[in-house]
Amino acid sequence: MLPLREQRELLITTIADLLDGVRHVAVGASSPIPAAGAMLLRARNEACGKAAVRISILGSAQHNFFTNGTIEIFDCAAQGRIDAFFLGGGQIDGSGNINLVGTGGYPQSQVRWPGSFGSAYLYHLVPRVILFRTEHSPRVLVPKVDFVSAAATTPEVPRRGGPHALLTNMALFAFDRGRARFGLRSVHPGFSATDVSDNTGFDYDTPDIVPATPAPDTATLDLLRGRILDELAETYPAFANSMAEAA
Amino acid sequence: MTEIVSLEALAARMAPGQSLAIPVTGVAMAATAALIETGITGLKLICVPTSSLQADFLIGAKAVAAIETSAVSLGEAGSAPRFTAAVREGAFALTDSTCPAILAGLLAAQKGVPFMPIAGIIGSDLLKVRPDWKVIDSPVGEQRPVVVVPAIAPDVALFHAPEADRAGNVKIGRHRELAGMAYAAKHTLVTVERIVDHNLMETEDSAAAVLPSLYVDAVALAPRGAWPLSLWDEYETDTAEIARYAAMARSDEGFRAYLSAFLTRRREVA
Image: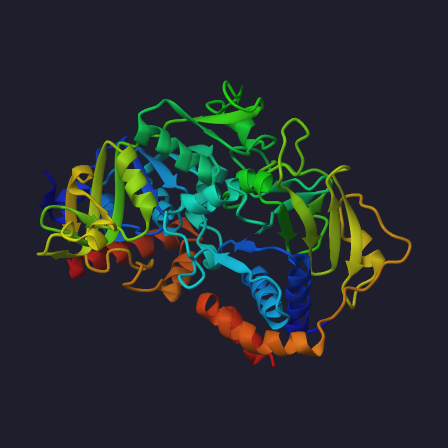
């Protein structure tokens, strides 16, 4: 398994790759790795003259250009002005549904998580939702969630939004919306396809040859360890410090 | 007319059993402490659209009979311990929501209509636990199912802001959700860092960032009134204090000890 800093750098780089082509990405509060991925995409695009990327980070003054209150990010999504967003989940199931509410009964859940936040809405409206959860275990990646905070697919209503990929500490999955099913795309260095199947509670498709998730190249590492850490420090000082100290 | 009152008098305007709308930014923590000191019970919290320390405080103090929220969490300090324990015990009526649905409910009240349509949500189990939300066929325009949520008209909206003037105009900056809460609520109570002598409505620039006194029942002075949470342009979140709370409030006894020290500190500052 990679050391913590290298693991995080791999996740950040993978997120930047998943975001390729987006114009506006929104990042929720307390999400330093997704925010870093968005910042890496922006820096890369600048370096090679591609279209500028707008980043909205909830909870950041510097990366927040909204002026109409809490509702604006939701209105913006409804207008089709947000291309990508990140969601996690205490549970994520094989159909892409997520549970941010809890397990062990409802309403008196014996394990209670914070709540659904804006997921029930944003999952319908943001075209490229990246499911990001570092823990890769059968208790997180379950056959069926106990509570559907947000549904991945709803054939009964037209929608532009939904899951694009699922990224964990161990692997990257792509999501097929037509079949409502994940497919393994790559496994991170230090893990095998067997590790992934041993730790995934739901069924998914596996290709004959499972590639390794590509590690960041030198130019990417230079950006990650320089400019991106500086940019991250404004919103996530503790995370930026821990990455710098691990150098 | 807006009255300028003491923090205690402001807290005394809340009655047991009322619904209370509280925000994410501009959180009136000093007023929350004063409210707990009145021994209030039976509050119906409406988190706009989530809450952190404030809801956890009121829940731990046994002041809450019901809560409508999209989430309660201490953010980077982890889960909200009193909320989590109270859910497990069934200590209050829990109404789970999703952020834009709470904002849509307030918007309906702001506009004086019984409901508001909202995108998304279909497929979520929230629809199963929210019998007050309906899926209708859109009566006009594109033919498709759409979710409608009922108006939310809180008895009281309570928030903290940097400034008010003598007339009770309140500077809210770009935090328009604070205005949204006030438009929808029957009464609005505000605490501020300072009361200024000049008229906040005087220039276009200043007036654009103001909630007019028309919507404000009472204002009380409460310097550092959002502490340990942040207030924009004034102070940052006291993360060490929130971490201390998160550790202590894991048990009911620890919470009691924290709350008691918090209330004592507020009395000393006042």
